[in-house]
Image (cartoon, rainbow, N blue to C red; front, side, top):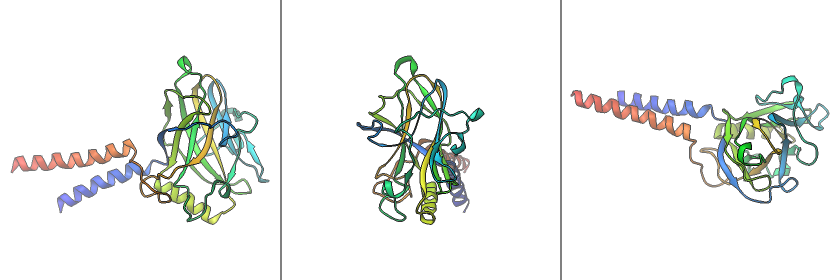
Length: 252
């Protein structure tokens, strides 16, 4: 019974570690032909030092950029954001992305891809301090925000149009987003992002989908490897159990 209790505690530690993950980095997404206009670009922003980009809906349902639509923990000091103009800033309906409530493609399959253009060399690395997938009602209300839990440092980018780093909802947050979609079929999808140590060209966030989902996420084939932090917590829990049992055995 004591062993079962210890194992149960280890499992609780693992679950607690996973619960704090929301929008999880899944590594580089290698591909080509990802320039503006060729993919579903959500927000494009550029500045030196700190840069911020936010896009969403205003109260009339129009797509707008700026601090008023920042969400998910992204803030704009002084109300200043750094979105570029042109085709790199858009919101999307779920239907336009092929998302359907309970269908083959759900929020469990959706990824945001951070595609940077820092110029290489001394201009890199750059840190993505916060990234958030935001769901808006047609009246501009924020229905849900799903953000990264910690900063992400990119040592190098292959350049705009070639590849980027993907971020995917964990199973719990994908289920939450899917429930919001089920209750609001006309919702629109936007994003907020902030980065530091920026030195060169524009950073673009675009939205795409993959078949692989986070554990328990459903929607699409395959399964993803648990994030390293969760795997470490999980392994540490069972290592502790093994050491405790060995100590008891040696005493006997």
